[in-house]
Image (cartoon, rainbow, N blue to C red; front, side):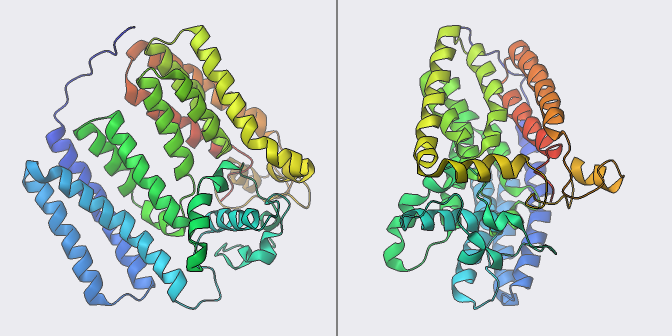
Length: 391
């Protein structure tokens, strides 16, 4: 088995301090604004931000406290607003559902399933999703389609079922668990200062807390992808395949990371037979997750996850916001907000290009960080040119 190449020695001492300072300040400013919007008492907000500043300062001044300082900054600037959002939704009366549409739809899908109703083809508008803060000026067809695959609402289902005696459930509770798992996985993939750098960058990137208070429902998929990468790094290729299969049926664009993690498995010594066995297990796990819903109502499943996502016409989600589709619409290349356009071909070209460059660099440099860099680029760029990412 070839060992990974030793990385270049980097003085993390100053890099970690600079990154923590540069990210913590704007994140704190955003959180302060969130607290003002929620009408939190000014004294409480000042105490919260002040305690966070002391924790960050302690980490900056004393190297021995840097790990604690980073952890306290993440807990304070990322987790506290999420906990506040959960409490606010269930305490403050409001005609608007104080949660993002993606997280709320996942929660409603789990509720449908617990009541014996097929989540695919269900009317989410009538179930309450129309009260989510969409901020759209049109009747959204997404209220009547569940575009994600089953893992998205199956993983939180045990917690959702356990919470039924309490009379309430909030999807963001599970998302906080997924966030904690991501934090742990980053520390396992990159022990010491590099792992803290990765976690700080991930959780404190300005605006992440704003997404998190609405419900960052990409986290379960990302946790499975990172777990698969850790399995590949530990040469547990069957477990890698299983986790990748589960990641894809949680959110479909997890497939963008599959070739890059496979490249790292090759770097770590996997041969063709091991990759084939891992791929077979991944396919089997994915099919096992999809089969019950296909047999329940195949037509509804296909309409929600394929036809609606790839289609055009009056039931398609109209182009709006940012992305390649909005750029083409504003420049007259696409004439109508629901017109068809071959975005799939553009996605394939961009995806294959990133996979090819990533595969070559990962094989040549044998650096674990390259896998995450190219997986991030693949998701960013392919989703940017996608017909679906429009807001």
